[in-house]
Length: 108
Length: 115
Image 1: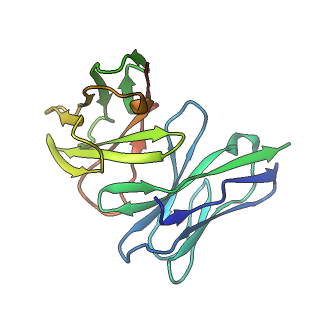
Image 2 (image 1 turned 90 degrees about the vertical axis):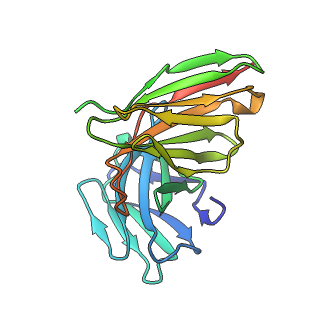
């Protein structure tokens, strides 16, 4: 989706927090924001989603800007198993519109 | 519960041939969506089926088609294959009630290589 931008790649040290940013400047008021991750040779896996307020689950936290034009996925303590491509997604109606993805590398 | 399954996992075809890919959703899920993933274009939405009807369609040529059966299993077909159709084809299922923000569960994909 040309309207969603993410850094191409990021690096983190193991057990450090990671903040993955996403800009979705043209998101509409009713589009949900989803984050999925994809490991090699696997389909995307659900991480978290939200609409307006910040969200937490056992995997991560999602911080959504007040104007909803950007969001940040927060992994509180990165592990080697968190190395993957992370996608920011606009949930447009029943469609998922994927961003380009950020490849996260986790260093031991 | 078993996850989303896709068959076959790998496929090699030649230009001009046609191909059919299959997807079995999670039990109880009624919506099935298909996506194409390529290095150049990323993940792109193809179409979505709910209760045997195509509910949404992405921006792909008519060579790409699909259908859904009464048991919610879905197939997608690509006719007159082109080299550019080489991709990972992903299927995802969800409850499908149409609630906003519904989570989709993805299968492992079918990797298609067109020679």
